[in-house]
Amino acid sequence: GYQLVALGSDGTAKWPVPFGTGGTITSAPTVGRDGNVYVVSNDGYLNAVGPDGALRWSAFGIDARNPPTVGLDGSIFVAGGPTMADQNGLTALNPDGTVRWAAAYGGGGLSPTRFLTPVIGPDGTVFSVDISPYRPVHRIVAVNPDDGSEIGERQIAGASSAGNSDLVLAILPNGTVVCLTSDQRILGSTSDLAGTVFDYSIAPFGVGTPMAIGSNGVI
Image (tube, rainbow, N blue to C red; front, side, top):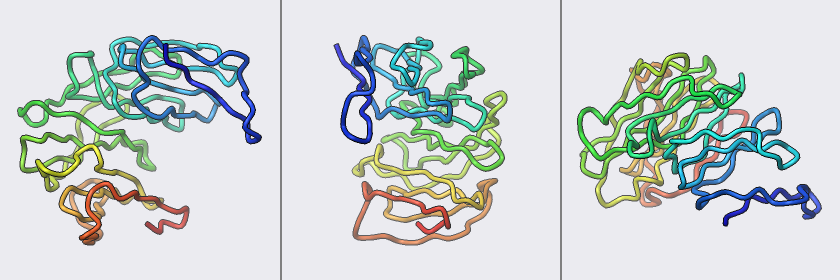
């Protein structure tokens, strides 16, 4: 099987027994404010593991290939689902593991398409990137965290030759939505996705360049 291991700052194991999953762990784990660790695996499960390494709950039917995102209220948002056969959406779960909503957006009617790791704005709005190698454009989408309804979108450049999975989405402290796009740009959009705050070329570094944001908003 596959195992999730927790290590202390001194490198020693914190859990007496590593947490085992039934499938391949498909992304890095995410740690919530309560210390719970959330990890997805390719057998369709999202597992919530407590700080002691014990399973808190499992949710089945999540086809997530990216790390989950945890909101300030403990809600969990994953790119993937709402069923294992459908990557064209996002799924939101309550802190107890029950599904709040599962929404398929379908990539504007074009398939296949999938979503990247969601990020959360200061007001709770959920943002993700809807990508498809068969489309000349991708979309940044804004989603209502309460019901999953799409409340905004912005088209960005797509690329069949670039590593679409390397697109990066982040939120600045002031709510600006920042995307590292397939055409080698860092695009800053207003929180409603209707306006441009900045548009900066990073060529020739290209897609896949890591992007980090400091607490002061410096990219």
